[in-house]
Image (cartoon, rainbow, N blue to C red; front, top):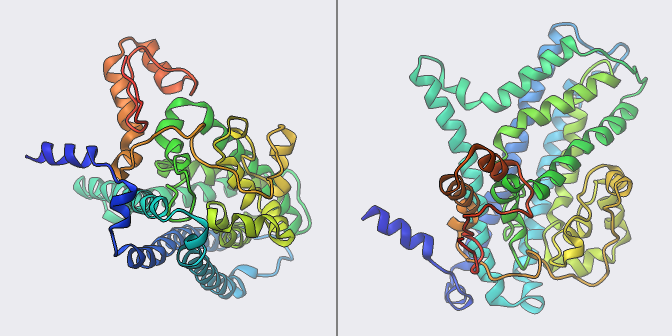
Length: 405
């Protein structure tokens, strides 16, 4: 009974006609827009609170830059709260404006509603999975005698622990005199890891199918109609923390945790335009927004071009570093056109419009390949091979012309 029910869910196809018949979609859009933005902000705020606690611990241990104004405790909390409130309001406004005004004249309603009802649950479900993984870790440690919170906070807690260890053991090799100089240098250097990570998700077949491919599926983009960029990257958080904290400590006497958080939150306000077909024509002609997008490392129309379905755009504008420095250095930068490009997988193949397949189609494919292809070398290639290669026996759960050999 349960197996048959799950199979029906897996095989369900949401057509444009079915989507148009759902009269509750506008209400769904309002509720989920608010929930989605709040969940993302809570994640950002949680990471910052943990970082703030780690910073206060560092100060208690005597790690503090000499002659440095105590920005963290006197200004940061108020400034951060104001910026969070502004960011939430701005993102919700842009999301609502993009749903209820522009799409009526710019987008096909059937396509618009179908993508909303498929990719929005996929995004929310992926966020829920992150919390579920944390809860399972907490239950696991609680079962063996530890505190539930220890497991639930394992990822963020380990990040804070890494910061403390780095502050104690990593030397300051270049003692820059001003925080802004250190912040610009660290943001630039650290962004290389983001560039490389994004590049790798397009090159490695496991990371592409499991982590990144669903993000490039939609043939129409909207903040609620695009799966998360990295669906199963929960355990990559400590790695990012490690690299960022280490780079910060190399060039300044203390980690610039709060300053980095403010910079990231400011950019998050404008990230709303990264996946918005409805606003492309408007923002592509705005010199102010284009300038902000470049400062932010390739947001808005620059990132939108990365989602183009044209083969020549598969590896352009990977987006990292002030003024897209790494794209320019490695030859992957391209100036976006004023006219909106088509988006989706290369050449827009037919895909299954089913949120379960969007989230789990990639992991299911890798699992199928590992089960039906023998040999250690073959299985290593399944996990670490090129995205352009496929094993002798494979299946695609996302494309309608998926194959099994």
